[in-house]
Length: 428
Image (tube, rainbow, N blue to C red; front, side, top):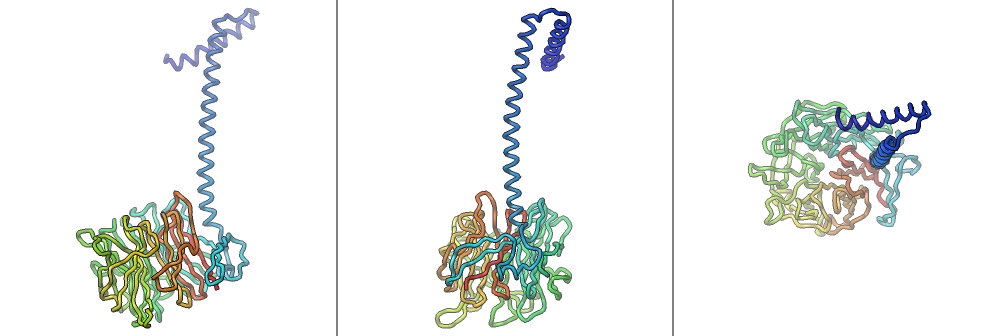
């Protein structure tokens, strides 16, 4: 018999002896009382300690549950109908956060919506386009974790006042997919989807699909030429000089694994490409990537092409570069006043074209903000709005568009478990 078994059996025998003595009218011996007192005292202490640890575990479980519930509730509290009308009229019953920030004397209201809930899945890097009035399409990649073999390209549609179920756009057996970018060329019925295929960034292959019906169906996959990835995160920019051209950022990785931004152009909707650049920080081999491209008008009325870019750790700022010859040559990238903790950015212009709005992470990926510029990115007003601010969480890789009614739509990764959608009505 083991010692532990003995500790359980001996007191039991003592108790039976006491009961037998009581039945015969005999008093219990002092030794019996001493053993039973010791046994029950030790059991009581063990029970108190176990109850203490059980209570602590229960409190920790409640805390984690509340944290999870709060994150899901923030994403799930959205209307099933009247999305855009509710934003314009302000008559919605869904979660609404009014930020007292003034732009041109008008207050900005933030209206929160959610796209997709895959509680056990990574949902990452969403990009949105407006297909037609009150009709939006979002693409993102999702799977068990980033880089896992089950990661696919998904799309999700907002139509008739609600978000529809997500659908798989493309997948490759045992190979992950990455960074989908939607683009709707001006004066075209086509919708283009660019994305990447490969086990890791160094082995990416650029791919694309085309749709003639707003993303309801897609033509077969097309592989891009070797070394061309298309837009790697942010949407492309149609140059006003040639309505059919795309200007986009490219994450170019050479055999030496040097990461630099470049400028790639297609004049035939992705069937052929030209690359110019690189766009880099002077004296820095691996400096800036994932450009947000846009056209800027100088004081003389000339149009230039600019890019705002994410920077690597150690640089700590959003960087800007400019081309005065349509993207053939570029200035070295220079830091702006906006912070950047090695995290993706994206921007858009307001409908009147006068203001740039940029979504960016400030001190960390747990803080997502909006900044505005009235001079094409020369100077910035930080903290126009704070979309998220929670230590220990991640709100990253924003994508920003301006819809036809002037509303600004921001989609971003919500703690790498959901995609969150924010609609902003700029001040009037």
